[in-house]
Length: 253
Image (cartoon, rainbow, N blue to C red; front, side, top):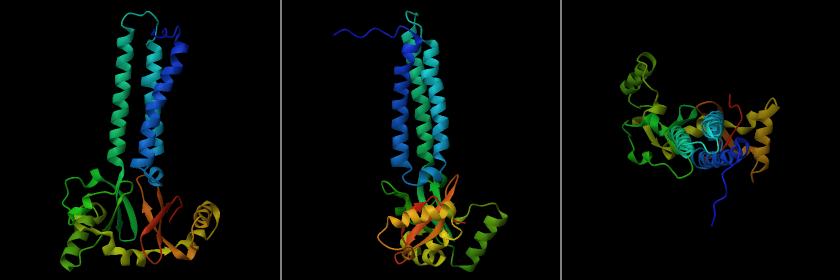
């Protein structure tokens, strides 16, 4: 079987080289969107902006540089193309590593909101409950961050955070408990989902559209804010159960 001849011009070379890079990017975006950042966490974590940067860099290194170097019959052309391909794959691999490290690993309820926390943010820190280190396959681990009940310990924590520049309890696993331990506190801090409709606008539209797809009514749900790296949203909870059922792209404040 004879191999097809190489492209005769840079123009002919560019299209298949662009398609190859598009495949690499599609694989990265697919894993990022549906495995590492499912649901609204994709937007709250600012991933679309990172993806655009990664795509731009990949296109310059891959199709751009390869097409610039391409000249039929050039000595060492295959080596040049292989080097650019290797550099492109390394760049995509580094980008994938960054996205993986930044993915929301924990959804920590602290005081009056959820915080999306990456595993790297608490790496090496002691956990009060070791089982909380394990994450479900396609969602962040739900965690309740509890303030110390002892007065001295509580005051020491406040001094450390306010005056000592220490991290708050949402990033200190020694204060973390299973989410079930704090459901009552979460429900107490929640607000009726209907309050997000007040004033109309985009937020009200997002909430109404979500409620229309549910079996119950808007009165069956409450919400608390959820904070991502780049944006905040509304974590919707079932009013009676107190567990999250959805995240909405709606300003919770």
